[in-house]
Amino acid sequence: MSKRIELLIIDPQNDFCNPKGTLFVSGAENDMTRLAKFINRVGNKLYDIHVTLDSHRLVDISHPIFWVDNKGNSPGPFTIITFDDIQNGVWTARNPGYQVKAVNYVRTLQENQRYPLCIWPPHCLIGTWGHNVVPEVFDSMLAWEEKWFANIDFVTKGSNPFTEHYSGVQADVPDPTDPSTQLNTRLINTLQEADIIILSGEARSHCLANTVRDIAAKFDADGNGEFVKKMVLLTDATSDVGDLPGSTMFQDIGNGFVSEMCGKGMELSTTEEFLA
Image (cartoon, rainbow, N blue to C red; front, side, top):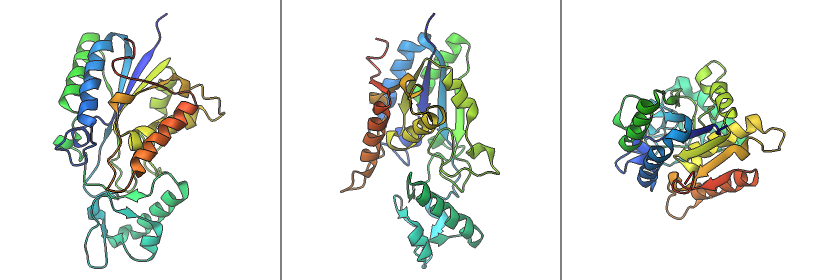
């Protein structure tokens, strides 16, 4: 019996993967070219293709417009806002009615120790060019759908403006009143049925890393790593968010993710080597 192979693509969108995108990940355009060729080459062996789509609104807790200083200025992109900053009045919510929610959110981020609140350029705004899948990959997926009379499994994330949603399966701080922020059991239960899960997309340091960690935490809580051992990361179809000058924080996060998951059994391959 042939193995059930499923491809998981994280956020292959223009704002991340096109040099004109508002949050372009350096190298992502080449990642997507290789990924499109990969889909064309191995499509007949793919049981399913899952694609996450970052889907934001302009007014979002991680966008500049949400915050102001005591002069009414918004933070610039890549500003890190800490709980101490808020406590000391460095940054406050532009809408005073959001202040308590914002304070509680940043406090929770500090407690869960995944990421601090980073202010990003507005990106992947719903309905815009930046939200769309890059044409090369979209065309390869469309051809796959047509040939196999199948539908791509698109998974949207990030439309709740009060929490970041790096992971494809749950928000950084799930909102108990919003099911879209809570654990996506449908997707992870589907992936559990796979024999091999191919991982790709942007960015390795953020959305890909969090997605894989959350899925692994759900199914490998016993520590034996059986679920992680199904995973194969295409190293030439993912890149890290670029660091600011003098910093290697995001690259270190990406490398740490790979080291952690390979230690649990994740395998590495490339778009040319896998199923060659």
